[in-house]
Length: 117
Image (cartoon, rainbow, N blue to C red; front, side, top):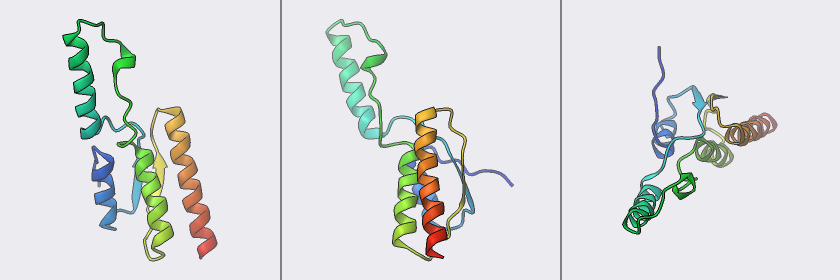
């Protein structure tokens, strides 16, 4: 038995909506979403056209495509649907602040489901 990998938050949510997964392992940094990618491409192309030096600050930080987005979706789903079977949740992200945020969401889900029972 192996893992099914989601490459985007949207894909992970779509997979979890099926209710067939009994565990999920979160990574925070899932890459840049399509909308932010378009903006970043525009910004970088403009910088190139203006002959500007490109540095790390020129890259868009996408907050739409993270494991935290998926964890927040799970929070809402658990809150809205008492029959939703909560998967076992772990975090494997190397992003410290992102990992902490996901762990806070997991803690909330665990407390909420325990108190609801």
